[in-house]
Picture (tube, rainbow, N blue to C red):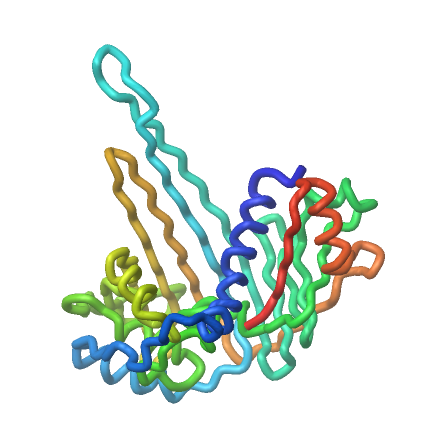
Length: 307
């Protein structure tokens, strides 16, 4: 069976890529679509407005970055001597990536130095080491309709075709749009040094779900009732480059607590990117993977890699 971290990666990929089908499903429903989009106009500090203009002029084709994902879960598991006991579990994963949009290729590598995700042209490869023992030692799944832009994590969102255009331009348009959803004041924290580079730090609370478009009135009402808010820390260089982007989500429920944060740092831009496809003998097709998962789990699984 596919277990642990590899299983979570598959589940997360399936959940994220399932969003690609939302516009078609909504368009084909009998429920009318909301034609007007929400007006997003957050009040930004003057210095952020100036740096955001510079960010909107950037046209970056390639970059190297590092990304850290951290989670913490606290669960009340019972009572001892009349008092509840809380158990906290923390985890952290670090990745490095390189992407070249001009060549439509990118690669994401784990802390162990092993590539995890590869995109070359319209073909994407996902490494799922746990399935290797079920398919003759082949850990790579080859998928259709790959998109190198999905490996540009610092640009704000993953599926621009599903998001409202809130006025963002340039390579980091989605990040600019995300800032437009800020709730309350955006704080100018001041100068900060990131990996030896001088930046200015800003802190905001944003609502990324406000950027989803093509929603029915019922879906829009549901999102209004279940608002997702993220804390955003943004470190911008004088050139307008978002050198570090940190997002954090927290949830409290009946004494239980969970948090997740993603930190992305750009280490270089407009740099050479070299990406190689996995060996053919270590690769199975998307159809073979779907057949394998049906055999392992007894249920049908469909994966699409699309942007």
